[in-house]
Image 1 (cartoon, rainbow, N blue to C red):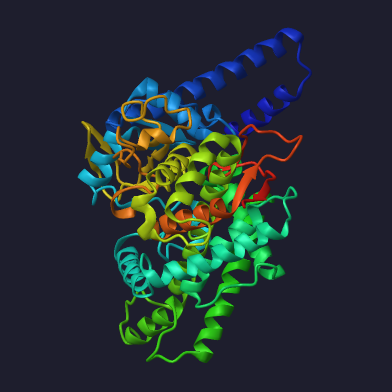
Image 2: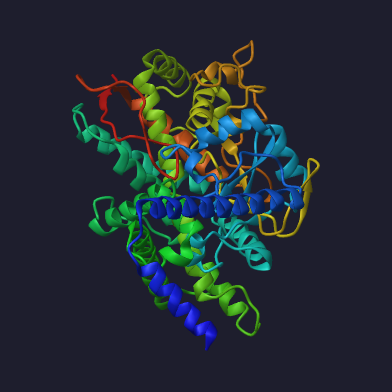
Length: 514
């Protein structure tokens, strides 16, 4: 009773009008309490970091970590600055969670190749978990991922990835793209949509056995959704959702559109798979989907199989997106650079003319005879740094690396941009210079730090296909056209805020060569 009476008494005391002095005292007390709470949270962060023997890094703020420090439109720029300050491996915080960043080629090589198994885990961030449910080729771990990757690699090779028959499909799409450029009759146009459609049709022909009409509105809508989702990956909303998903999943926002896009894309893919089920001959698989259906039948009596209709949907979803955006973006970069550097474009024209002439279709067999063109494309990939931060890795167990401990569950950023711009391997790295890939005799020379596709067990599964597409599409266009900046338009290079480093939309004049 006395306790309850005391509480009632305090309630009425607080409710009484306060003097100005009392109000000031209350504000000071509130500020003091906030300060103490902030200090306690900060100490918790710092003691946790020390206890876990994490690499050094900037001091995080309570609740938000280091998110406020990241460049809103280009977070990789902030990571480059932090790498210069803290060195080869450092820690930042996304909200309350530590994230370890691997900086520079030597560090990436030691981790992804030297300790390949340790760093083979994928961080299944909340955005990715909600889209793929820890299934499929990209956003999974353990036995599921290993079996999906092994099967996908073998099947893509069976259907010609890196071989002559796939080259013929790429060449066919390149011809359609050239025809589209010709129809513009040397007038300004934005090439982005048609380049993306051409690249997407190559992976569609492998996975689904057929190409789409590039004018088909459904196909164009799907590609637009892919672009929207990729753009979201570079936004503050992406980091915010991954950090505070337990709140944001219930609130309106741009993230809901991304999840709806993914649902529509997956429903479309399920429709294509359903069509395959109705028309397939198990004894004569036509494409990747048919082969996956055969694998599902083969494992039908295995209670713990990783080959199901769901896993097929998510794997084809991964292939459709990965096989479209990054390669198309690289080709757009190449077109832009040829417009910006006409002297380089002229050298490419001369080399193509001397080796292929005006009519011979390019082939991967020609690459050795086109060292300057090959050097240009390698420099495009280096400079563009399409996926600067790579896809997030995760420590699936405690990892000892460079004298530090990366605790189980910690996200790891394999910072590819830091390798492609590593000053130890690239002189004057901020400038576009294809000659860095040529020796004193004009022959092509490799550079180990050139890893745009990543390295180790999680490297891009479609690297050979992407290299083929970039080479054949680029040469097909340069063989037929001189690419020029339309009169009155900017010649500068501007980037768009996206999950990949992409050029802002631009127009080109494709002048037919005679």
